[in-house]
Amino acid sequence: MTAIPALSPVRRRPLRWIQPFAVLVIAAVTIGIPLWLVAVTSVKPQAEAVKPNLALPHHVQAGANYQQTFDEGKIVQGFFNSLLVVAPSVVLVLLLGAAAAWVFARRKGRLVNAMYALSISGLLLPPAVITIVMELRQLGLAGTRPGMIGVYAGMYLSTSIFFMTGFIRALPEELEEAARMDGAGPTRIFWRIILPLLRPVIATATIMVMLFAWSDIFYSFFVLGGGAKATLPLNLYQVANAQLYLNNWHLIFAYVVMMSLPMILVFVLAQRRIVSGITSGAVK
Image (tube, rainbow, N blue to C red; front, side, top):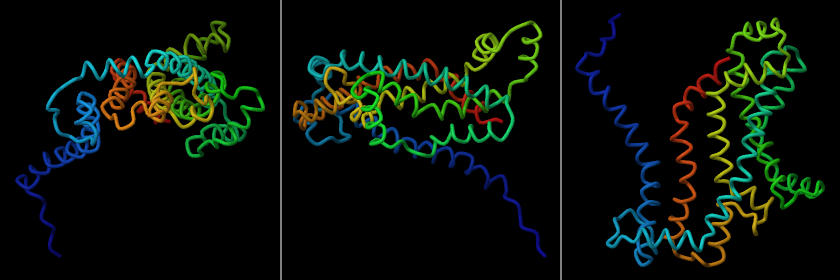
């Protein structure tokens, strides 16, 4: 039998830069082109933005577009409505997820395993909108912020539990045992030891939940229904549907840019912890 000749260094060298280059090209096409389309259209006059394209504007009117969008698009009202819904949802998801993950990571048994599997089943099973709306109506929470907060908390709690359970399992139990020997109870151990150690994965969970909830329009449409409590995405939908921005793609994309700025800021500030939190949460 003849041995298969190994690849020579000359043949290996092109692969070292071809593969990264291909990844960059794919990323630029799938991510860069939509971002460029939104950004460049948001600064075009209406005549140039009737049919959005990737061409540079002949005349830039970014100030007029963004000022008109800010004044007529109810940006301030939508921002505070989104903040009043998203912030409590994130707090609930983090606290409830951390407490549940601590129990699942430290307790053993078939019942605990079954409860853990049930808790993370939300990663695969989408929530039924009709059931959610009917249940909220029975509870008197339809069209209210507490109802929307409960929906978001229930939807994203599975993700929080999944990441935090894997992270806690990687922590040494000796830290908790030493605290118990010093007389610390479960509540003190949770607040003084577990939560501080969960900072990387908490940052990751915060980013994920905020990105999903901040840009959600589907569930907020059925739960809140618009009006004075409309969030930013829902407000954009209602304004566009009311023909204020009909064919005014330059104003629609300007609204999208302004709506995305808070999440971009949060992502930039917490990006150092995201990768470490995902990696730690995936380790058993």
